[in-house]
Length: 109
View 1 (cartoon, rainbow, N blue to C red):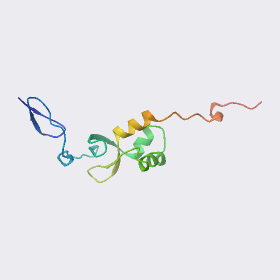
View 2 (cartoon, one colour):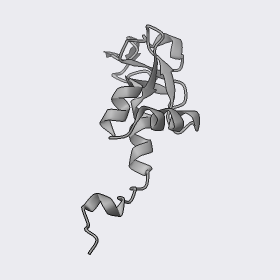
View 3 (tube, helix red, strand yellow):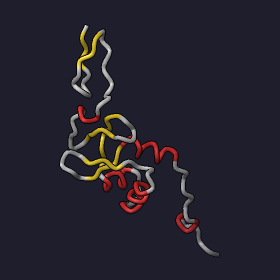
């Protein structure tokens, strides 16, 4: 029995999809690409969308990418995007920041 792996377009036997051993065989799209660090196809998110999604700023995302906490990948048009897998793993593992005491609206008596 033949099975088509929709990620690579390759055909495996006995219903077993083939894993991507050659990243060049994965077709890059504007919203997805092969991440060489994760070693698998991933969805891509723009830096600004990643910042908005996690309620942070562009500089924070750039800082995390420069520290290799986030993976930078080029989409098919050459735009630098963020690997969604690394983004979600990074923010799941990140410690919660404490609020500024003034944020709660405390009044001085």
